[in-house]
Length: 610
Image (cartoon, rainbow, N blue to C red; front, side, top):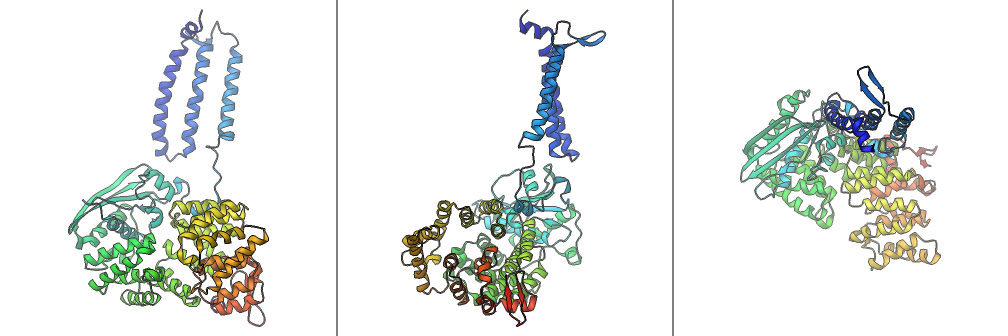
């Protein structure tokens, strides 16, 4: 008798086919039922595994047993039935061992500490706050598709309004807007941002008419909780946003404070043209498009002409000036002027204080910077950007431990806040956790940080991979003319400098030193960061302190970060460092707010640092 005939006689094909049909139906039912009961993801995987393992077992039993009127009995013609069952049992056991011990996809993938911390807001799905939401950028459905800035602005202003509701957890703007144009699955977005709900929508602007369509979706199952279209004139924009925000708080049953019961979205201006110009400038600021900052300054100036009492426009103009560059029209004096005007019009705004804090830090007025930062935090305690700026200032002035806590808090709210990822990665680099630093810089690069490769270059250098460090560093240096303005021939000098930095050869290092001396001899208005770090690399510590003390560098924020790193004990332990902290303004801040992590006052009233 042939094997095929024997398999047919014993109904192996019939039972196998029936098993596959039933198993497939069972898996389909489980894939629907398990999530409905909040079963963990691994439960469905185990169910599928058991179903798959059952198939060869069913075939073995079909071969080895037969159904008789007296019940199930061993097949009369079967040999080695016990051996077959034993093999099946062993295979089943091995499959389970492989699944739980050997399969990488089942085991929790090792997550770097930084990623775990930056995803602190996204624990297991069962623990997600039901009153949490991400507001995705709205799609531009305007006929010419030229209203992206307007659509983004509508979504951002709704997000800002919802973020003021203390009973709601709102994902940060940077992380939510990261998904613009990516067509990601909403379940994946909800899981990544740790939110239970997602608001998405579209804007159609044509002439003076606007239609905003919005829908609130439960992220774990794509269930549409609410959807509505709103039509109006451009003059009605704030009212349309108010109706959307209020519909969301109603759906999520958020508790509103007294003012919010009356109004969620403030009417900042009665001029629709001024508001449109404000949104255009906001788009430039959000992208940190420095070359277009001059345009943004012009737009905001026109908005203020149309409505001199438009407080957010004054505040936004202050921030553009504070963050911008002089070659593109930025002015520190104008930044302070506009911030003061904004506060006179609306003392509740946080952005003017942000601008004043940033401005004071640039000018090394650290006591003023701290006071302004505290005022911003009092008004926006849960804003990721405000918290990040606070962390920057704390780390810059020696309060590293508290600064790291603030960075972690900012990333818990806005996990893809690129600059916060950069600063947190630096702290991991200084602590020697290179793998985590590398992962954070990769995430920062994916989130749009233009200088993420500079961070990756530092990781490569720490691993003694100097070729990679050089390859990553050089392109960024060449793209920034201000950084190389102190060199006569940057295309030649910069490679010579980096060759010497990463070499042990005395001649190469001497050539690099010559490039460094050329830069300093040119007496640039502001010293580039690479030049100061070069002095530290070559052991010219006191000279480095003298250069820093002359005045603000091109990147004081980055420079001070390095001064407080674990590797710069050699600088902090210098006798000259005591005079340095007094001259630069650190001592005045510490006298007011207490000594930083690594410093203490001696009997003479001077600060001594470790």
